[in-house]
Each structure stands twice: as structure tokens, then as C-alpha cells.
Image (cartoon, rainbow, N blue to C red; front, side, top):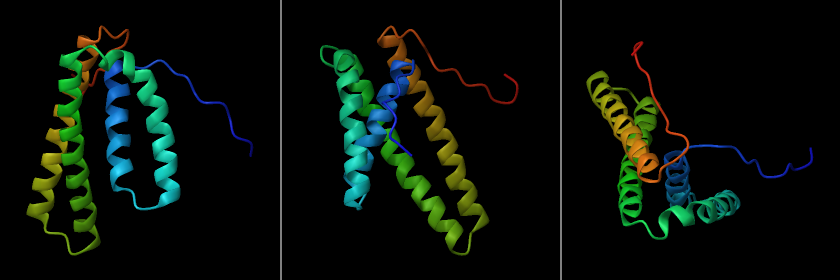
Length: 132
């Protein structure tokens, strides 16, 4: 299969910054050199697109830092959750961990919305749970 040209798709600025923070975390934590190179290539391409939004906007830089902290915490919780399921799961501990992951994902979503609004993004991500 031949490589395709890079995909260009409209998305919210919050989603762009979120993806960038995830790639920054992966670049630090992935041990495979081959995978890390691919992650860094994607991170660098998205950083160019995100730069105009972040360059002169202190509020967006701050929100990006908050999103990085949230995504690092989510990474750790999801890692702990996967480890828990490989060993003998403790129902109470697993339930508490999954609740924390859900709450962190809600916080992540709210932060992505704040980023999109602060950047006057053409798109803003919306979530709907339980028919709301």
C-alpha cells in the first residue's frame, strides 16, 4: 500500500491542542525508537498548525498546560486500569479508578471547550450523555 498525503480535516482548536498535548506526552514516554519517531513527526506537524493560536495568547498557553496535566493524569490512570485488569481485579479499586477516569475525561472536555472558545474556533466539540 502506498502512503497517502497528509489528511487535512476541520476540527476545533481544543481538539487540535488536545491531540498536540497527547503527542507530546507520547514522545516522552514511548520507548520504541520507531514509534517515537512517528509520534514526533505527527507532533511537529501539528505544532506548526497550533503555533499561531499559542504564540501570542497567554490564556491559551495556560489552558494548554492545564490540558497537559489532565492528559498526563489520564495516562497514568488508564495505565493503572490496564494493569489492574491483567492481574486479579479488585472491584472496589477498579470502580474508583474508572470513576476517576470518567471525571478526568469530563474535565478534559470542558478544558477543550474553553480552548476553542478562547481561540474563537469555528468548531466547538459537544458531548451528550444519557440523552442530554
